[in-house]
Length: 262
Image (cartoon, rainbow, N blue to C red; front, side, top):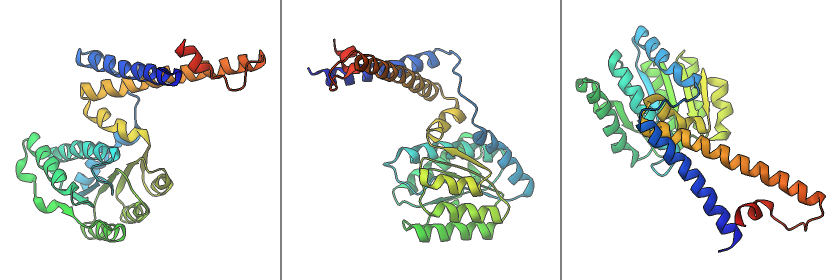
């Protein structure tokens, strides 16, 4: 087996081993620390304010489909938001852009109400399949936000140019807005118009952060440990490359492969 293949296999084993070990630790009951994410902490405050105003909330799981990781992360946060809203008796409006997303979202919302002992609060009319076209979707959601005078809006998932249209509308009607996306080109628009913006990988950590489910927490912690290991190896590789350059080693020598492959 070539050195490059050995290197990749070893790195994969290190990362997988770190994740598995932390999952086992979490299931055993060990304390798993997750850094505080301010935007997620404000979810409950936003729900409380919507309750005081007597207004519904909008939770959009993004414009992505079931083939994107950001969509699954958004749906996990949707479940948490609906469960919290059920305790306050708040109406949750969930606009959906994809046809395949629609039945999945309906089940998640229904199950969330049932888990809180409030199945009567679930209404199929609150989960809306609007359109797969970005312009039409944005127009429909902003119209709902204006007519319902929502108290809070949450945007968790993948977005395109509709991000600014949604966030500007929410800001204009005075809603508290929290956005979380891995669509880096849309982050500036959310930052400009929302109260809190969760960026990049924090979206993937959100479901573990909110649910505190041991397997999710362990997986999240294990990935961080794995990144530390891989980052350390990269630093060692760079230092080794510099050392070999100073000692006159051939330019094509790969120090990291040499370190792991011998």
